[in-house]
Image (cartoon, rainbow, N blue to C red):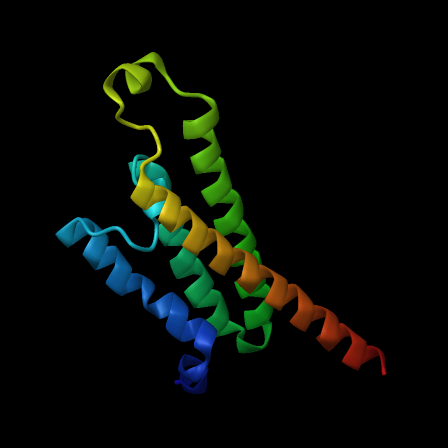
Length: 138
């Protein structure tokens, strides 16, 4: 196997765990990995496919894992903020009348945890990319 050692990389293990989250989400209705897309079935499936694409990239190109991880973190944070903002800033009449679709306490907690993790992962990736570029210049 060409990249057998790549599975030991944290990025690869993280993306491989997507399968567990996918099974929990679709078979047991426990959405942990893409909770911010709970109400958007197609976008949630596309997000899982994106994560499997990230897995393929880090297995295929282990040396580029920090770029993949940084990009994925940015996509996650942007999707998280956009999905949250739309529901908060553009409530529909049905949402206001029924109270459904309005952001709940658990969703706010998920937003904070996922957002902080995504931001931390993104900033860590940017720092590592900059360090690698500086090493290449010397």
